[in-house]
Length: 92
Image 1 (cartoon, rainbow, N blue to C red):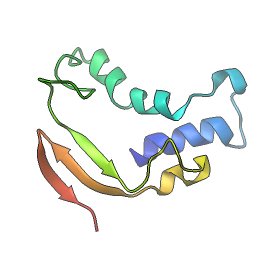
Image 2: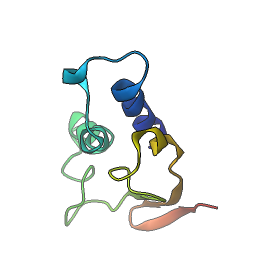
Image 3: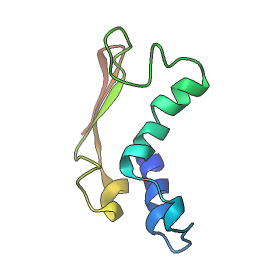
Image 4: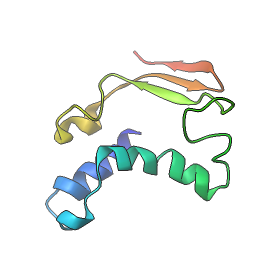
């Protein structure tokens, strides 16, 4: 998660800008790490978004990537990781 959001920041605000028309929002970046890969793998009916009947795989972050300074996105800590509705990782 952290790596994906860092790539978004660098593409949007880094030294080598791709141009304003090529920038993606945090929402688009998150979708690019969740629903889009699920769709590409033809698994979007069971993973990739929060819907009744889908697996409850998620990460709980220390901060909301939508509200932090884009420069701070890569520093957001993962507090918990859940797979299939079961907590698999509890951050320190």
